[in-house]
Image (tube, rainbow, N blue to C red; front, side):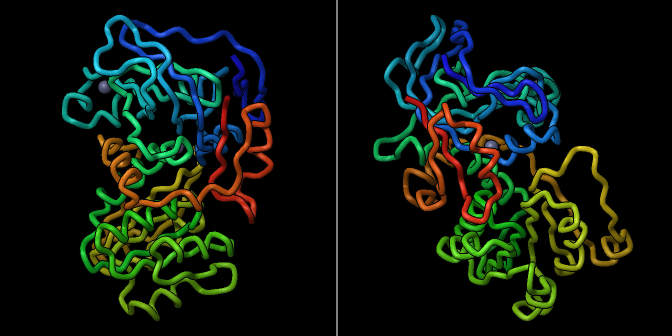
Length: 337
Ligand SMILES: [Zn+2]
Ligand SMILES: [Zn+2]
């Protein structure tokens, strides 16, 4: 099959690799669409650890072509998306309901072969049916949306809250939509790219800030004198992370959602965290949020169609890294077959 393989940082090649075969508890999926994640770009830049060589990509929608002998309830012809994270079901985290923190976590497109390919295999327990009426490209948003749902759950957004979202890319947009549906009354998105600010406003942001020209803290405090109830840092930008501390109100929550390069440090003022009783949290993958993400997409509660800026065939996969993060780029979607 054709696949985009990450050989090492900065070295992705599109070429033929052997077809995967499903184990008895797995299904073989023909991939139709795979969204490009910030994680894919971090992997390419060497900022996120991977098991080389590995087929990149994990935000997929496709069709089951074969089910292993021990699989029940999923069969050939089913349109599906997946939770790309394999877990052990046996470690202290799995056994306490925190499978996303599994000690033996193995994620497709990172630790084992992923979905920028014509085929992939997944355990049947990771597979979710795509309802009628949801396109492959929309269904490919299931995994990032599940992560956004988890982040908003963890941050504890409440009815009437003021939420600040730093970073208006695809993930910031999904968090904006989820925060709006969780009841936030004011959602302020800080984003330097004009297209992303426009899309934020079209998807539930009540205010936007251009951090390239405006002072984020000053603009935020014109809207809410005491600061935001919840601040989401979605860009993984270290300067923005460090600058979050004075943006939350006393007792507020700062959520580090964006992925920072693994070896970076930031400087914060612990006195301010203590004095203002701030909660500084992280959000990783998702905790059983995949089925809810499918529901949000199929009901039209979360809208993703306008978030796709480019659709590329798999054979042109390398264009992804030219387009990623560009002024006209939102979600990049790779299609197969
Ligand atoms: Zn992702
Ligand atoms: Zn485990």
